[in-house]
Figure 1 (cartoon, rainbow, N blue to C red):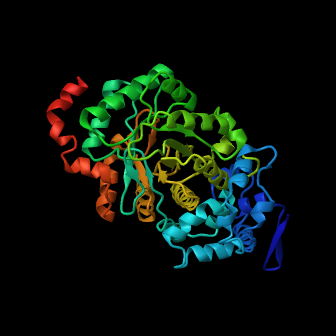
Figure 2: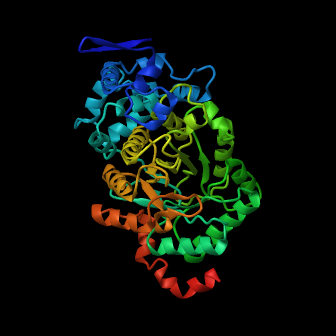
Figure 3: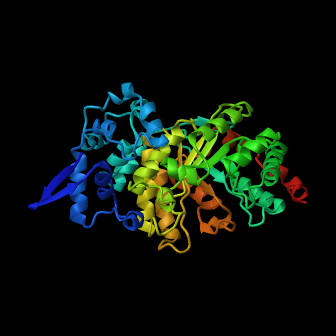
Length: 449
């Protein structure tokens, strides 16, 4: 299927849906690197006009990655709820945008619609939206998940306490955890990126978090963000695994570059469910994504990076995850060059994830060689707060000394909560009201010793 739109006598032609989506995308260095970006602002506008007129039903008949060769495409199309899709199946992409921005779609209506939309539909409508549109629609969507805490409720903002250490030193990690808990961080998860992904290291760190959690009765969940196979082996050896983590992408080939496929994730999901460690719910998976991951693996199949990112959400929602977040600026300036591109991408990712029914968080971050700074991150953080982001990162000093990138600090979360009148999860809030770690100050030094 080809598409065209005429501007000022010039006919702009787009050979297929994949090209149309790429040319309609907001400017970003990743699509330029891939050679699929619009060549001019006029071509971008023409693509968006053609995309606005495209019936949503077209996404059922033309896949951007071949159905027969890509398991992500098969999962997306086979699991689409066609009954839910009927609500909007008569609309074009442009009409879907207008409907989403109207007063009609309530939180309940959007929740019911989510399984009826494909990631490509979500990506398409986001390409027609301004920043305020992305915020306005996302703010109406509340995706609530539970394990030991409840994350995603209205007027709540949770945090992942990220106590990484360049040598996996238990004392250094424990000190960062205590620092974060004293600053009201960690209700989404205490999640460590390990230097070593050996099963022994994963077990050691899991037992460390478990000791913190049980010693002081902290209502939270733990995660060591090693490869899923290391976590599965740790479970087999009796380690206290709460959430199971894996980075995922939007094509089968990109996931293969991570050493995973959907069947492996299914096995891990089932294995973790059998542990029954959740106290108030059983959302047990934690996925991270990021625009550019498929391109960096040369596994994007000519699809623009934002549509590839949305397709990763199609994988994630199959597993009813506790947490999903884009690490929006982490992959580097080759894919999102500067602060403006990172801000736009973060809001696109959050919008698409929420529209598809996912509990979206965001690692508001950048690498030190990107044309971005902490002011840019403050802007994105504040915009995401107004958009109703489920959670953000809490990193000591906003500077991850193991992964060598810049994120958000414990104080940033406190500032955003204060500014917007937000609170942590109800269970964590109750624990803080009872004294939290403050009532255990006398034992903190002994714990670190």
